[in-house]
Length: 305
View 1 (cartoon, rainbow, N blue to C red):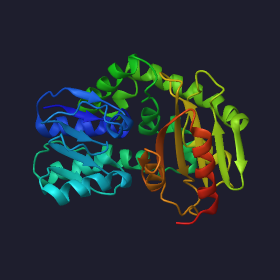
View 2: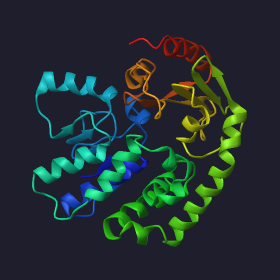
View 3: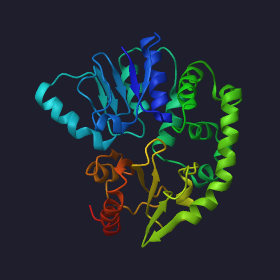
View 4: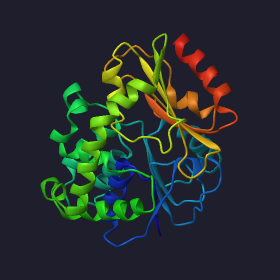
């Protein structure tokens, strides 16, 4: 039995809850959604998958992304054998938490952690939280979770342990965590100017292109919505850190304006990606990205369901 989840804050909290529910040390396998979508993920019988697209080889599956429901629905219709839970919700961790609580498998109370995870993964932040994440420990902690180099995997595992054993006040002063938090604060201070320099506005859509930067800068993913308040949605592009033949595309609707009508998860599913109604991501071949982005921009500008 293994936990297979995504290396973001929601995935980390999923692992925390699953370990607490099973009360035994299970190995954690960290993979990106694209690995499941392109068939490269090594999923085994007995695996507990969370915050990832459905793979019928697993034994238990939890998720909350609208784009991941179609394959799961098809599987249910053919076999009607399934353990876990799927629900459109702010976070996958919240789905996991509710499932194990209802089954009486959780002794500890993680209400605060799930509430904060819902806020972060559901992008339900205030302008104050976006501009000053250093004032909000859970938000700042979530920004330290990245997938850029080999040391990150050890950090993800460490966060799982810390979140199971310690309070947020204790976690935030841990030497490794503090070092990464300080780095995030430093990155965020310059990220605003970088976004302004590399973002263009096409009608009411902001398009940030980091493909000329190596490495692509890292920073507060919510900041774009405060810098370009007239935009109803945003697109960001950067090369994959490990494969320059792949471009990572992220799309999000403004968290401060409710005028974008297109389901982003379903839109990106047509290009091999997916996500939520309000945000999603996709890996595209570098040779195809310009054509795909032109199509996507036209759809987004039309703003029709």
